[in-house]
Amino acid sequence: MPFWQAERPLLLASKSEIRRILLANTGIPVEIAPANIDERAVEQTALSRDPGVIATLLAREKARAIASVRPARLVLGADQTLALGAQRFTKPVDRDTARDQLLTLRGKAHALHSAVALMQEDTVLFEHCAVARLTMRDFSDDFLETYLDVAGVAATASVGGYQLENVGITLFEKVEGDHFTILGLPMFPLLAEFRRMGVMTA
Image (cartoon, rainbow, N blue to C red; front, side, top):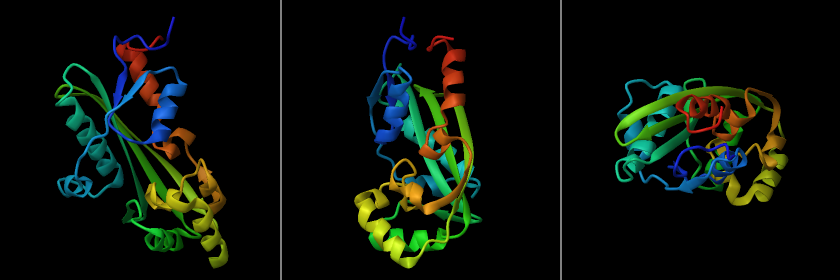
């Protein structure tokens, strides 16, 4: 008997390949339906500058954008924010921006907030935000240039300029938190909710 008990696959309102893989690896059939929202505009509507609140808001609005046009489908939105104290980071737009972000993060600890939101039609069924703390090592300028060469476009594909599941791991000296949270999808609470809802075998 398959783990997934819902009649139709889960709709993932994200184009993140790693999120799709994480879900598929647990036996959840996934259909990709990326949400086209203006993330910066959504952030401006937040009632708090707290990075966890903003990550949750973005996850909810991504889910809402797809749920509104795919009625009766179970939709999962997800988002992640990175904060160094009060300073928040977004995906770098180019190599120079990635370099600047990584120089700012070098030798310091920052927080990743990963949020998920489940929606069906206009109803929020579940929301959760988890946090992980990561400490970058005090790498050399030469190492940073080599990293950017090796990482290539991946340095601009994720918030902060790194992907921990790939060569981004070489930037760090310590990681505190759940591995799935770092990858952008807090799996344990999400799977627990699927089981509670009855769409996944308990």
